[in-house]
Structures are given as C-alpha cells and as structure tokens.
Image (cartoon, rainbow, N blue to C red; front, side, top):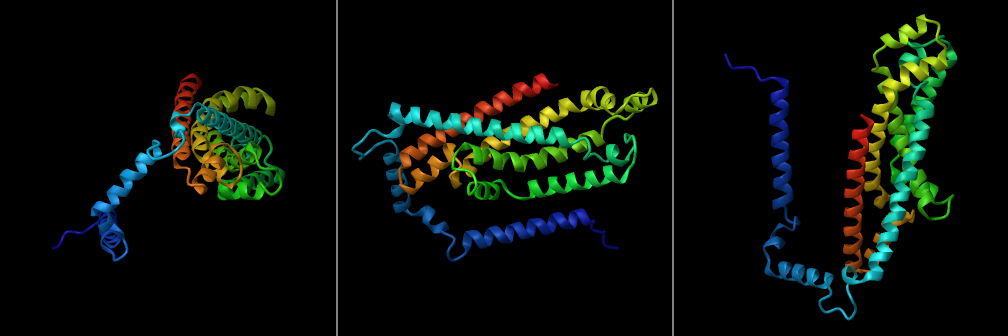
Length: 278
C-alpha cells in the first residue's frame, strides 16, 4: 500500500514546483535580460556609472563631498523624522481614544457593564473604520490629502497617521481582548465604575503592549515616509524623486545614505524605548 501524502507535504511540494517553474521562466525566458549580466559592456557601464557617482568626469564637486549638500540632506532628514513622529502621534491618539469600545469583551463581553445595542453599534462602526483606514495604502491617502492640503510634511504625516490608526487600533483592541479578566472581574464585583475599570484594570495591563506596537509601527513609518514623499508630501521622498528625474545620481546617493542613517537611528531609538516600556 502506497504511503499517504499529507496536505502540508503536498502543498510544500507544489509550492517548490511552482517556484522552480517561475524562476526558470524568468531566468531563461527570451526577454529576461539574464544574458546581459555576462556581457563585458554591461559591467563597463556599471563601472562608469559608479565613477560618475563619485565625481569622475564631472565639472563640479559630487554631493558626497559637498558640505552644502550634506546640510540640505540633513534638513530633509529632519523633516522626514518630524513627519514620522507626527504620523505616530495622530495614529496613537486615534487608537487610544477608540480601542476600548472596539474590543469585543468590552462592547458585549465579560467586561461590559451594560450590553446595549449602542455599544454593539459603536463596536462595529469603529472596527469598520479600522478596516477602511488600514485597507487604503498610505500612498493613496497621500495622493488624496495633497489635493486638500498644500504640499509639505503635514499631508504625509496625516496620510501615514490615518493608515496606521487602523493598524494600531486593531492591534490595541485585540490586546484588550487577550487580557487576564480576573482583575477586572474583581474590580467590577467591588463596585468599580467604567472609569475605575479603565484606569486600574485595563490600561495598566494594556499600555506596555500598546507602546511596543506604537514603536514597532514607527520603525515601519520611517521607511514608508520616503515613498509617501514621492507624491509631493515633503521630506527626503520628494527630493529623491526630483533628483531621480533630473538624473542627479550623486545627489540620489547622498539622500540614500542619509535615509539609511535615519532608519538606523530610529531603529536604535525604538529598541531602547521598547526596553523602557517593558
């Protein structure tokens, strides 16, 4: 009798076969460009491009060695950082104001003081808002908002804040749904009201996890901010798009260096703040 193949093993084998076929089609297709990687002319052009990045054959000073270019890029980096911080303030405040009624156990579960149709309706409205705001990408939000607000860091921050509000709100409400209910039940049995339940039962348990999620999303936002800046939302992204359009690749390299430094700084700051939050 032939051995039976489980669903998991069959799925893994099917995935491996599809991946192999896909890469074979990409690499060995007629217009894949794989042959260009082995042409001497291709690597000669790559070498010329790298030399031009560092000023070879250029009449002026390349951006990497120009103090004024560094000052300009540093100012744009500060704008990008300000955009990300403002976005997280918008998302964090919005999530903090809505995650309690958006939790099932608070709306019509064990932590509900009165299971009324109003609390259920508020729950579904907020959850639908979470789905809508996080379902629309940040770039689309930025393209819509930039028609209302003048270009700058504010449209980018609002776009990032709206999208991350839905993400943080959903994560925060699920944190409340996973809390230990015993302290809240004890508070409720002792006659505590809704405010006491929030202040002494829910927030002390939920806030450390909420701050951790907020800092994780900040790391994501600082990476997304350059993409949002492509639609004239300000910061490094807008300047990156302009320099690419003008074929100023030495300026593009400088902006990328500043962007990587900014991402690394935010990652380190976020890791330190997460340790404090625990």
